[in-house]
Length: 299
Image 1 (tube, helix red, strand yellow):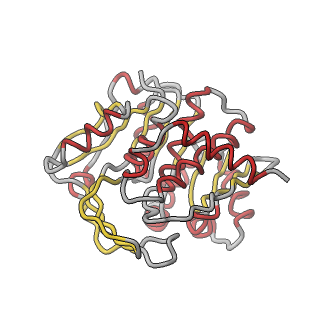
Image 2 (cartoon, rainbow, N blue to C red):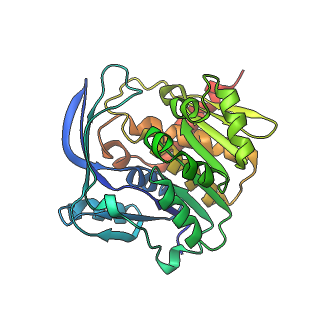
Image 3 (cartoon, one colour):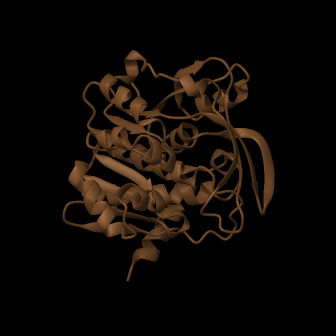
């Protein structure tokens, strides 16, 4: 049995930033989040890739301890092409080719269904609901979303939010979903739907967590060299839930600690394209930067 089930996209990305350009590299929300979770626990991925998907990418995930038995091979791979300007907080999409991801309907392997931790990455909320119906008795469920689903499947999205323990989204998505410029108001509206915690990502500025009677601010790490922020939000999410699964402690103090680990891994991810920086990252690197975060927060 895996510790964490992660459902989302495994893709081929073509990205250009002011600091370089890459073509058809490994990407996707489930890719970044599962690789990041693997620093702490044993994740399993549920996704679909095409017959054109390079085997070496699956080998990379396997080598990191990610269970890929839930990845189906069919049709053509999901491809995303985009670019960043000097405001590295927002990607501009040039093209999206969904391939077999367009008709993806996940079926969880039997050994995934009993997992106690589930992360529903940025996918169709109808698929997220389907997955929730397949897991047997999870201890903690967390979901992410994006502006497309907010604009096109809002009612289904609200239904998913009502069924999860942690809602994860970025600041612009929070404003859009709850029709307010105020993130505190947005978080309050989200909490009324049912989640115990709402985490709002703010890119290089870190993340905010809100619960019923408290809030927490996880800072962003002042990275000197940022080459490509693609997947940093997913890296944050994967490290967060990976750490929670490893400790099996879902108290608020431990979720705060998990957020810092999430910020640590996300900061490393932004230092290079695709998973290049994460591929060379060690647990010792993570712990060293975690200690730096402790210094940043002390006053």
